[in-house]
Amino acid sequence: MKGFLIGLGIGVGLGVLFAPMSGEETRNNISQRANDLADSAREAYESNRDRISRGVEQIRSSANNVVNQAKNTGADVAKDVQQRASNL
Image 1 (cartoon, one colour):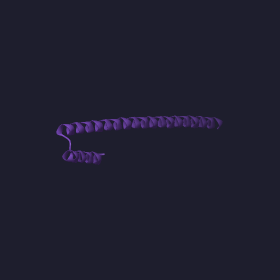
Image 2 (cartoon, rainbow, N blue to C red; image 1 turned 45 degrees about the vertical axis):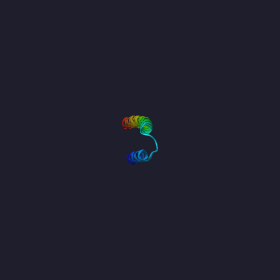
Image 3 (cartoon, rainbow, N blue to C red; image 1 turned 180 degrees about the horizontal axis):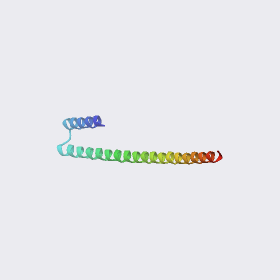
Image 4 (cartoon, one colour; image 1 turned 120 degrees about the vertical axis):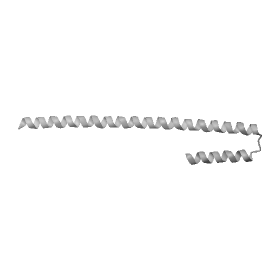
């Protein structure tokens, strides 16, 4: 991502130097590109934030399932031990 941003900056700089547009047109163009880049970064951030949030929720759910299974298995083992002890 860092390399992309550096390349983008260099590309914009070279575009400004060699552009056949007036100063005002160039400034407007740069401003529009910067706004587009900011929008793109914001969308990527939100998308990744949502994806990570869903992943965390799935992990929590899986962990809860494992804990519940362990509790049930422990309870079953305890009952089995009690039954065997009472049969002795």
